[in-house]
Image (cartoon, rainbow, N blue to C red; front, side, top):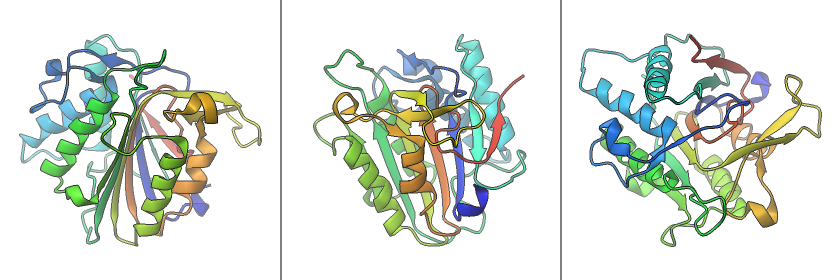
Amino acid sequence: MSKTISANFRMISGCKDSQTSDDVYNVSEFELPDPAGLAGGALTSSLLRVLYKNEKKSDDDLSFKELLKKTRGILRRKRFNQIPQLSSSRSMNIETKFDLSPPDGHGNQRALLIGINYVGTSSELRGCQNDVLNMKKYIMDVHAFSEDNIDILMDDGDHTDPTKSNIIDAFKKLVDTSEPGDVVYVHFSGHGGFRMDDDKDEEKDGFDETISPVDYSTVGHIVDDDILTSLVVPMAKDVFVTCVMDCCHSGTVLDLPYVFKANE
């Protein structure tokens, strides 16, 4: 699979494929600067806590290994069992410095942020929209992303509705507008799941991982194969893409070939 992915993808997922992710109901516990709302995803809140804390140490280069380890440490201290993972499209050293842009980055920066609370349904969540707002603040304040280049899909009545078709179209828009050397950030907070693999490409566990659009009850879920074909494989060569997937069963939802787990 790595031979068919031309872009440099790295994904941090909230848990292993076999696990569920959790919400927190008081983001202030994570000491984020001006946090949006009370609730949030456990992964997003823990991850941001580590990143903001590291920003105060100007001489400290945070590696992916340290980021996973520290994020896992916060989750454990707050009694969350989920184990975050890093996966990538290319073989990489886990000691590599974490950054949303490569050291020699020279292209444009774009972001797609998706937060779905499933408002008014039996599956309603509280913190996914807040995750998007908190992550938007981080990438703008710390990594200088321009608001003009940030697309947001949320079920709040003010932004583009995160339907299945709109999410797939947003993936394709990123592909169409990104060029070699560009930097892309993708964030999803919402429900995730799995289903029996029907095309025999999930040899390890026999399941496809999924994310749930706001209209999943009528049009179905977005399967990892859909993300692979609409976002991952067609992305231009040498685009630097970072994804954070804060949802259940998200460990390999981008089907990237290299996986690192924040175990003991």
